[in-house]
Length: 531
Image 1 (cartoon, rainbow, N blue to C red):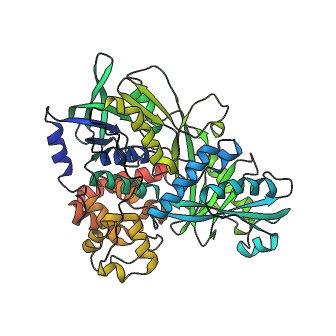
Image 2: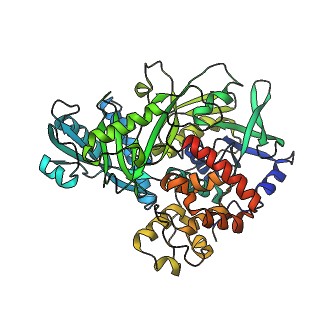
Image 3: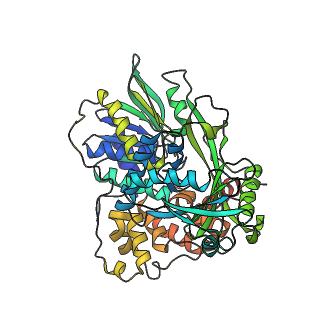
């Protein structure tokens, strides 16, 4: 079996160590999204004693509620930032090569209309640069007749044709878990529902953190060479202990999910919204069709989940009705919604869509904070953060280290070989080094696909037993995505889910009732149709 996962006694064992006043860490990382996970992965591979803390669940904040796209940043070329695009495209290609089944190529299509911008000539000129960085040609122009063959229901008023190109798509929260597992393999300690309550200082120098187990309120004082603040949209909260400077502009991006048969698309469509000419995507994901995203200020952040507003709901439904009028989508077709908050770095732009998307790092005497950037470039962001933090780390090594994110793993498990190719690819991509253990744990019938999703039942059992599931929403919204993909947040399969939680988490009927109530409140408030 691979390096030990988050098993039942994981929290107790780690907190016993944290209670030891002699324990010292090279790096404490606050934040368990993709940025924190990437930093933990790079720190641990360098032999640094690394502790990652997430005050909610892993990927809870932004990294489970992104637009699921691993893209090269085509917009950066138009803005003249060619270097950022080059790095993004190269990282996209790396992820597709290292994690097929988790990060996969997806075709994108921009329909061109008379008088619209960008027109075919300008758009294809940008794509020439895009493809050059990828080292291969993805772009292709389609005439109106060809476009109708690809998408019979597309709006054809003043249609000039369409340009197809390529980026990638992922399950963002599963990507976080795979990166965290790589960090664990190299010795990092990783724990959820544990927060940095306040910084410990010697004069003005940060020397550690007081942390809190948010499940029982117990606190621990932990010393470290450096504290890295990777809390994303919440970064100003921790920085407020070292500076009055406020740099984060939280921006909400919301999405709708509909059944694939109601809006069948085989690729992502890039659509300029008829109301404000903002680009919106309609794309296939996990057997469903997603419409998103919006881009609005979200100043009332707090420590709670964001939710789509009625105005955003109508805005997204409008763009789907514009691009695919024959589908006649209505509110009753919506299965779920989600809203994530991006940690934009404020520059004074009039609206969040005009803010820059690249990352910024602040060094505050032993507290190194990171915000901004893209999911695609999390590895490069991690390297930039460690380059700033290294002056505080006594055991930092300047040696050459692999750029490979994921440890290669080839499964020879007989149960995997018996599955269809696409299920083999999915399980290997989503679970990497843990796929053999997952297959061994699966019970009879649990390698069958869950209706309405692409997951198999064994994924729920594995996650419940081995992936630090504390609440039902951890299991249904982040370890698996049943809460987004299946009606009623997945609870149409309540009996089977309850049985798995009883087996692997030891939940009694009373605990199940409490978790179900909590989950339904979260789902109805933040993942359903807004009132």
